[in-house]
Image (cartoon, rainbow, N blue to C red; front, side, top):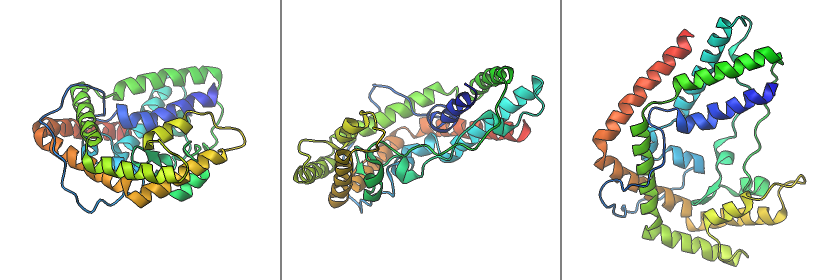
Length: 292
């Protein structure tokens, strides 16, 4: 379990910290959030460069996780683990020993497909719906069994120390995201764009599908050793072409941003407090990184 344990921690530091460790993270909640939302006015409806870019640029994202906060949280975990290991007598232990992680996929490959369609055809033609393979982790020295056990204990303590305690903020942000998505599902422009996308996909040989349903259909299948099957590549490239042709992604993200702006306006006081706590948490993480 030597290297695998640190790889698992790397996943938490990257993806998990995005959601769970920021000052006001996304959560789940089924309660209604604020007044009824109205369809936002149509604008340029420009598609973002990628699905991940689109999600990170949404108005509510400013109150939760950002790439900078995720990176700072990962650095804080490394610093705390290293400090703990030094106190435990492992004087040569370094921050690089704490987490073993490879480079993250680029934004376009990391989140290319969803309810908004698929970005772009050149990615679809290579990876289908299965996502980019993880980057190779840099070589790390092997840890002895006792040192590995100590790392695990220090890791548990580090995550407990930096876990956000703003549960109310997390719940609020989760409810607001859920409310914006619920409004989006009823938006006439998104419905029309999705219908146009479905017509395009039917003409391409994939009738009766939805953007998210197509992703779920193929992503749920184990990937064969021989690579992505031709049928999946055909479905993904057709998805990408139809997404571009109907501007589904541009309309989807523009409408979602419009609903989120309405929700922010009706919850400004609560979100301001959420942001204040997030900024205080940023300062604490920076202190840990600098002082450990």
